[in-house]
Image 1 (cartoon, rainbow, N blue to C red):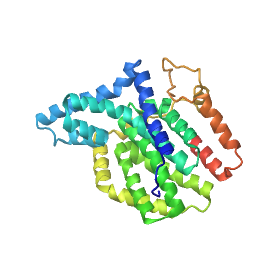
Image 2: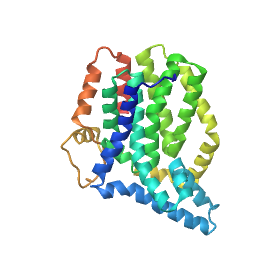
Image 3: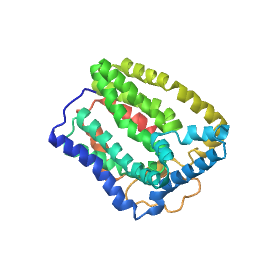
Length: 312
């Protein structure tokens, strides 16, 4: 992604895209403390339990190391763990809100710099996506939220690499792709699928995209992450029951059931037997999706790629 100078107008809209989601979440989620503090209190309790474990000299036990690698290996947890006390608890709460701002800024930059939308619409899109039901649900698990934050930035660097293919773009993309490791097992599983979508999407959109450069950059990022990936895989084999995980994540509802419960006005208060769809999509998003597929300036290949991944 080429370096560029930010003018005063663009700086204002980037600040707005970052600041508004944080304010919206502070004002709204305080009225739903169970949803807001489930992630925060869990992290505070985990840090307290982990310090007690270390105090008993069990830090080098395999189950403790596996637990750290599979569920707690991300920067904010490590920082709060090292600081501890009231300041650590404050930082956990602060990071909870800042993640929404970072996600909004990433979407803004992709929309403004790469899709070439206006500053205003890019900021609206970033804020709307950040405070959507998907973002709020993801925020209850910091690792999943970290993956969501990396995605728009990875899309930005992948786009720049396919368009320009300079050394700066290549190594910037490598660093960005490597950040998927902050999502732990979620990042390792989501990263390849997301990068495949980005490559196919921009191939259909640009036509002359340099797919090989992106694949090479992602491969180099995996090599850089190899020590952590190896440790994570070893930890996962000893800490996670794969068969149980697949059974718990098995889809038990029909695709049509998901579609009929995604729109505004639908409320599911008690999970129904055999039904666990939790997605929510507003009418605005549905209208934008329809306009996307009706837009004649968007190549058919890009639309087909989106349809395939939506169904997938």
